[in-house]
Length: 406
Ligand code: NIG
Ligand code: FE
Image (cartoon, rainbow, N blue to C red; front, side, top):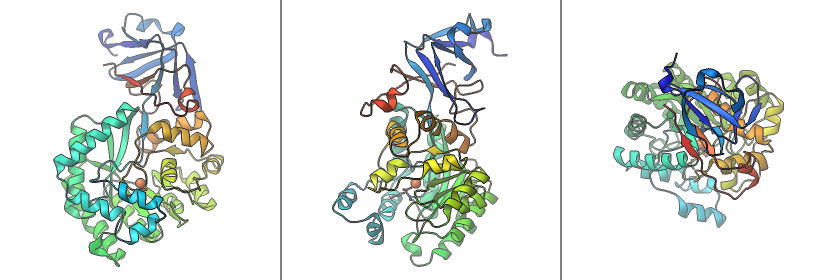
């Protein structure tokens, strides 16, 4: 029992909007709602008129007529990197392709050079600035990858920076991704690099930074790593207690979706070119397809991921930002939500669930992404007449208030 003194009720809410963890894709819009919390957790959510008597003497937080929602959960970010690639962005506008830039030694490798040059305190400062931007826009938990070090010491500094960000109170899950690209030092020999990562670096990084990373990831793509190489990286991660995620089928169909099902990945991400068999396999294996529509937009591609087909097959789709300097220089959850509706053809309820409950589940966080009992009591308050306004008023930069009852 939580003592009465620490109970709080958020009331005077125009409403509360939340996915229902017990019913796939269901979103409740509760008008004139109240949320009771204690010990940092939601204890009850419902219409204010039905607030149970045990909360009647609780402390009150005035919702000021706004709509409460759970915080967004972003399950795919490349939060930490040095430098930026704005000049490269303009070259793409002049007609040079992403693949050509990479072939010239630019692209990810350019960011690797800038990231290797950054100290841990510099990385922490960059991370805090970006995490504040996420929080201001309503993202209260996110996944963050390594992968711009591509050498043991630089990957280790990235993990150290993530550990320090966590100890400063930021809510994040860390993914180890030394196989994000083939570094210059291993040019022409991806097998040797994969063996180094799988047999030596990943075990060493987990040994040096126990408990920091919870997931591992690899870029399976034509010209990067094959499914067989991806499998070797992910199986090494699994032996170390890390759960697999995969960058899969972003530029063409390479069997990444199928691989995610075979290794029982928590998520497979991008998937613009996932095959029908891959989609069915993900549905059967319970892999969460994590779609990144802001990346498709930023790359100027026209093929958005086949979200409707995935939902029809029974997949619990998630949406994410993919924030990174090359293919999506963008921290904007409302843009992702809007692209989910307008380009992936999701309903508001589906897109909202894909920004909250489903990404939380893919990260193993049953306490995030909803407002049912047991959920985190960190809640967003939106000054809108209805949650649909977040998509409908497409150009509006709505910024939520955050309440965090003790
Ligand atoms: O998720 N696809 C691979 N990695 C990133 C892009 C990284 C970069 O261009 O720096 C992505 O899109
Ligand atoms: Fe990515």
